[in-house]
Image (cartoon, rainbow, N blue to C red; front, side, top):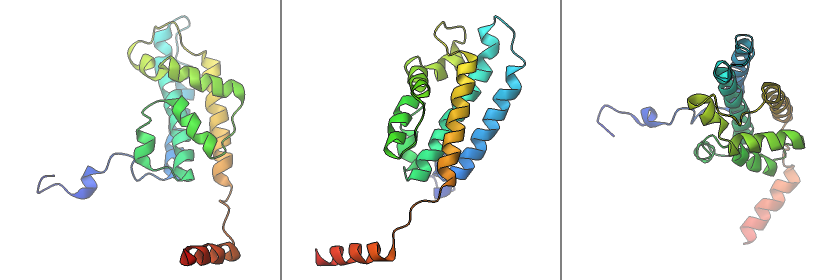
Length: 170
């Protein structure tokens, strides 16, 4: 670190983002995707690339928000890179329930590397149908928002006393 560089300048972008901030950003990407779908040229997979990229990124951000809210540290989430299937496995631990079809789609998006393909080879053959991407984005958004709106269970005073007693006895 140079003499002029502070510790806060070295924080990875998004490191300190809250779940609410990630949801707000995901909402912006989702709205941008909605606006772009109307600009596509029928029969041109290249014209759908921006829509695809924005949908996938919005999905990733919603899952990140859920994981941050569940207590996953930002560096651990960042380590997943753009792998939606890996995020899906983690969300299972915290109770995010998605339809089987959506789960299969998220896995396929990862296996087919659609995030990269949308950026660099949008004319590839194995891409999700546009309505499937929209449906997945809608479901992930709705289910994440529902989970985030529920208050986290609080430990009762009795449970805290029992935990303290058990730890002091050890």
